[in-house]
Image (cartoon, rainbow, N blue to C red; front, side):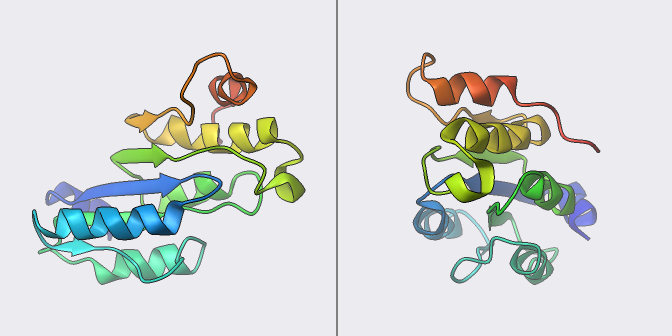
Length: 145
């Protein structure tokens, strides 16, 4: 379904990061709605159940699909990207919110870095290229297709 809608002009935007995903998704959804029909999920529909439900809300009239992509473990974001590959991605930040799942900020950065291999227009989750997290993000292995 997503592939068919993308071929018809749908622009999918994906948002990930350690924090701020839902607020950013809500704001971006409101801004894009002024430019055309937009689907943006309520709440935090950012997992294997919520993201596909959001995609199903889009139809041929939808111009923008704003998706929040969360991760509870390695490979989760790559799996969500296979369901609905974002044309534009935004990695908000890499922090300590997922230390239990990824072991360290560097592990979180690698998981978020996997996302960038599926989304070529993804901005790096850092403000300076010298931070440890940025180095881990750049070294992240490409996910299995």
